[in-house]
Image (cartoon, rainbow over the protein chains, first blue to last red):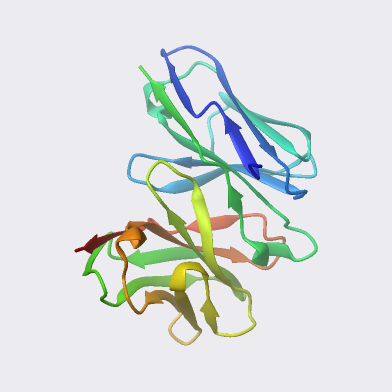
Length: 116
Length: 114
């Protein structure tokens, strides 16, 4: 049973389109994250939600909008896709409270987004 | 502000040789430190973590890391490399307050030669 699952695994789309990536975790964690990994493997945090509340919103274009309907789900919607959005997007979760920063993350397997 | 520097974007070792991947951190408060491994086309997997208990931390797959506050380092080692260790390794730091943000290093690609 997958702990953090993302769908879809691959996404190829044209510039200007709107797309969504979904993430679900069954670990009972209270915090979820979106990270972007570029072609050089650099990982950059985009957003974080703690119990459905947005707590981290890094310098990300407004075209990116996260939504967390409950603490087990965190989705990412991207409007007007651009070539530079091509990357691997990772969802992760952690139990940030009651143990805090030392718990580490559990990552999903990633969504490879290719904008053509 | 916290940051992580991994020395060497690529490291190559022979099978059976010592693996040493270097990581230095910067943090304004006592940090939590992590090493993650990423195999091709997969997500990151937690190898080990330092949370202010023992300074020598043992992880999965025979890896260990030592926290040295005076050197602000958290280097990852494994006594004997195996072909299956070939992967990308990331050092990461998060601060104790809140702990919602983890900053990752640029990664080190480990190659293992037969």
